[in-house]
Amino acid sequence: MRRFAFLLALLLVAAPAPGQDRLTDEHSYAQPDKVRITDLALDLRLDFDRRQLAGEAVMRLEWRDQEARELVLDTRDLRIEKVSGRNGEGRWRSLDFELAPRDERFGSKLTISMRRQYEQVRVVYATSPEASGLQWLAPTMTSGRQLPFMFSQSQAIHARSWVPLQDTPSVRFTYSARVRSRPDVMVLMSADNDPAAERDGDYRFRMPQPIPSYLLAIAAGDLVFRPISARAGVWAEPQVVDAAVKEFEDTEKMIQVTESLYGPYRWERYDLLILPPSFPFGGMENPRLSFITPTVIAGDKSLVGLIAHELAHSWSGNLVTNATWKDMWLNEGFTSYVENRIVEALYGKERADMEFVNARNGLIEEMKQLPEAQQVLMLPARAGSDPEDALSAVAYDKGAWFLQFLEQRYGREAFDPFLRAWFDEHAFQSVSSERFLAFLRERLMAAQPGKVSEAEVMAWMSEPGIPAFAPRIESPRLAAVDRARQAWLDEHSTARDLDTAGWTTQEWVYFLEGLPAELSGERMVELDQAFRFTGTGNGEIAQRWYPLSERSRYFEARPAMSLFLRKIGRRKLIMPTYEALAATPDGLAFARQVFRMARPGYHPITTASVEALLAKAEAALEAETRAD
Image 1 (cartoon, helix red, strand yellow):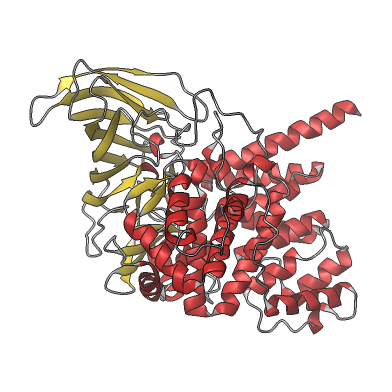
Image 2 (tube, one colour; image 1 turned 30 degrees about the vertical axis):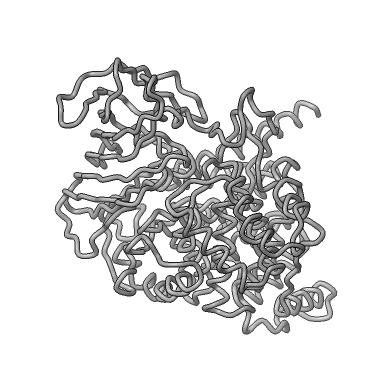
């Protein structure tokens, strides 16, 4: 998944709870050392009017502790109606269960008690209309404006809001599903979607490869399919599908490039589902069916690195998964590195280097706000922490930078086979950083002694910041942007005189991020008249222009800013603007006004982020007023 770069708030770094270590998933109530789900069978009804999924989940269990007599599951805001168990094809027997009080962050522990161990347990349940992992959109919030739309977002721990299960990446299971819905919508899941499927209101799915809970996914709406290749294609609303197919036509080439580097694609099909603009992330790597924001359909393929990123997850993350969220870098760091290799192979080293430099600069800026304990790749156990704390630039870009360091020290002729062996030998497993370190020491460090020291490796893994010996890629094209920007800032050139005709999104992003935090009104007008930033359809540019506009008191941008915030729900793109608005009393009032209009179209995850930001800003303003 592509992260949102804005950090809503900095949390205090808590000490590990007694008896807790890095191999324990402190974000789940489950007890996988005693019993594990190996297969999940869902039978659900999808009700748009009630904004609800209701039915049953049947779990096949593998008991690891012969004395255990409890199955502990993760839930959030589920109504549990009945629980039963059976062995073989025998009769279902009613089981006692207890649903613990709700924890704001982790939901409610569901404890199922039994006198003997059962091979299967069935839970009859229904979701809440406010389920944190589901968004229900009225027809007016879709492109076609005729049919409703719904979709899930399970990462990090939102799967528990629509399925009772062991919501931890350390547990992998196969699954099947029957989903019944109104017959005029197409239902899809992170499973074996049939490109030729017809809408009939009764859909069946199977995922034969074991996956962790955060990769469970479902969507329903006015969706049609267009092929890109024999094994790849696009699902989208009819109004969007043709533009998406054109923008992402290189998907099959991306698959082939990644296979040539890291081994076969093991998930059979790779399709893209283009979601409404309310999707809170850039993409979500649900196996066989990546969920994609429409904000990357730029018309010039300048943002298709996101497709490379979600595809790369088919090897790093989906195939080899971090066992806990503390080792998120094993997922996102590897994926960001592979993404860059795909971009280089298809679009050239120059573009790959520009994308890496932009990511590196974003990492350095973000780390200035992070406590040192959160700047390490191997995060410590923190009781009560939010697993999304791990979804920072550290996991993505420091992780990728570390792998780039290894690549440069050992050379691609050694590092590429090493990485392929890592994926091959740990396929369909959940692993720890300790496992990776052991593999690295055995396969590279021992085989080629002296190229990388233990101290250097641990500096990356467990020390804050970026090691002084980290490789520093530079980009000649971005250096030219530096010169152009400086010439304009020094008033040696007007904005219209800058030679920007061939600039890509990567260069515009770099240009904007290098400007001062505030500019005069005259300079903002000059930029806007030359480059028409206000009202841009490119979300990456808007993400940077509107905060600069607000800090510079360039209120001419506010009407277009309002439209942008109401249309887009992707957190990475909108949170910097809300942050800039919340910094002043009048900006905060404007943000509240816009949010009231935008909220019905936001995903619950985005809503929670904006609410928390605005509440914090209001509290700070009230405290300041009282002090005066």
